[in-house]
Length: 460
Image 1 (tube, helix red, strand yellow):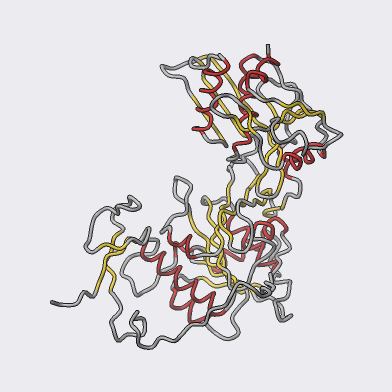
Image 2 (cartoon, rainbow, N blue to C red; image 1 turned 180 degrees about the horizontal axis):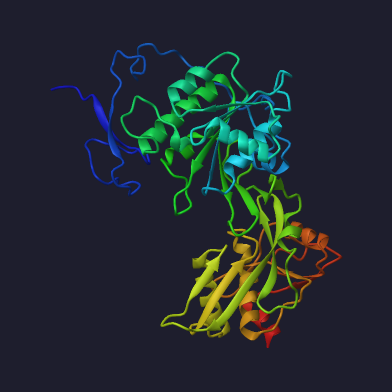
């Protein structure tokens, strides 16, 4: 019987199959299973016993090595990356087309080129574009006022050429690949942007970064669902995954960390798009609330936590008479399933009829809120819009709502109230359990709410 020399692997999730299939049972994707050759028994990549060497183990005791980080001097970017860029790390940056990924990274490498590396030499930065020519990148640099920055530019999409150029003893310290979907390796017959090409190109670049110990940014496009295009195994291979979010109708941009081996996840950085590029926002709460109008029914301020940073945003709700055959639920910046749950709790536990009303909910400023602590603020805004009774302009609200209508405690209430006090708020509605002894803020008058019914009594 002939020995098997190939296997079938899903290019999206990496599942191995004994034979070809049209659909992957693990990830549900179609036409992602391709045939790959197995290494021969006498080849250097074989998993046999020949050519191997004994590995040595170490215990958990001992002082860890202090990690050196390259600072970009863009505080919001350094915060999301965990305090700076670690040599040898691979950062995958995703975002919608035109959101500002290339602008942010060009500003970052321009700032990094002014610093020094681990040995005290000037930081060498390389920007490789597969989408634009060198002249187009230069035009953007001139518009941003970065034309004098010491950054090496190149325009190519061939992975073989990139590896041959960068795989040298005096390799650069920072490399930007814009974008990974345009890169290709001539060992595959498929076109650039396909699953196989993205996976192979990413693997080669990651191996190169680890071998030559330089930090590399991989720019990735996103699908219409908002996830990074290409194989999900690429997200598992890299050290850090950043999403650049924002609405083109707003000038705010959010850089969110969803994976970071060298720092905290769910950290965010806030930027403002200006004529001279992206400008970091040191106090995003004040910026998000700058255009807020007080004494408006359906508007309240939510005190949230994004990563390690407190964030105050305005929650807006509008309740209108039903115009179509079914009530409409329009949500911007929040989970629509979470809104459906809040509406069901208000009807079942508080006796408020909303089944014949159109509900519109908006998180002002273009920020996307995922924290359950926003539940009580959403419920309060909806009831305020329904009764046309404004919420006090100097009040902040936070708390998680359970299915029985109870208000549950949320993490770090003292940090949320400290941020609210800094911005001049004087009152707060917060959950009672586990917070009365922990929260100490003399400048804010705290009201504890244990159930939505108690909250609804203030509107009658």
